[in-house]
Image 1 (cartoon, rainbow, N blue to C red):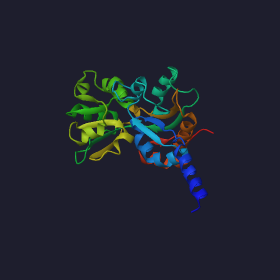
Image 2 (image 1 turned 180 degrees about the horizontal axis):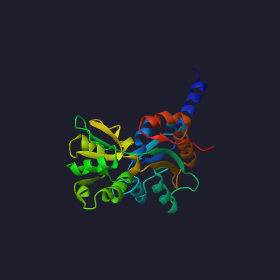
Image 3 (image 1 turned 45 degrees about the vertical axis):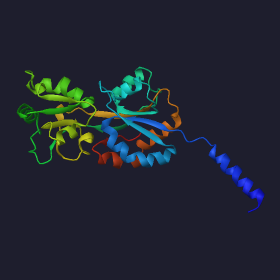
Image 4 (image 1 turned 120 degrees about the vertical axis):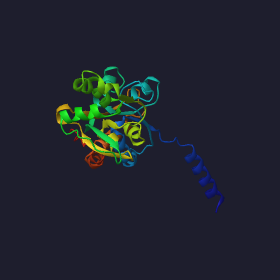
Length: 258
């Protein structure tokens, strides 16, 4: 090889070596959308064209890994995926960029038991109450679904407090995991958080009369260093192509608004 060619190649490789690396896009996702997000991550990362770093936690609550607490500690965030009411609260606090909220999916609360255990009847409100009163132990999440169950539904079904006396809030762990290892007889959580857990039998959703639908939404975090990439990622998660994947995880996709 001629000397000038060798010199040119050396200069080229030196220049390439000094190019800045593509910036990471930081995502915080709440548990209810996590299964869908993980299944969509590879395709959406390819569309965005930048590496994506993910963190997970509840939409609310006292757990150290809850998304509001992560933000309070100053952890980097570009995209926030969480229960809409919690995202709106962050928006009111100036922690999201106005106008960036996109609704992704609807989620309902369901019940699972350990694989092989009898499936109790929760087909009606009366049957649900009977099942809860007969259970030895109940696990519920520390996020949106658990807040509804512990603050509204359980007290409504049992004013004497017998249900809450044997119910336990689960922090920083899937309710299904607790049930699968035998630490709780009944486990209530968003259906999308129960379906992926091995060692569970899914019983069904709460009766319609006492069901609580949660909207999972995405928004761009205030102070995002990659707001354009964040918007591209959210658009990918809300795209028609993402809908079948979201459905498979137990959620109902919300069509993107034109």
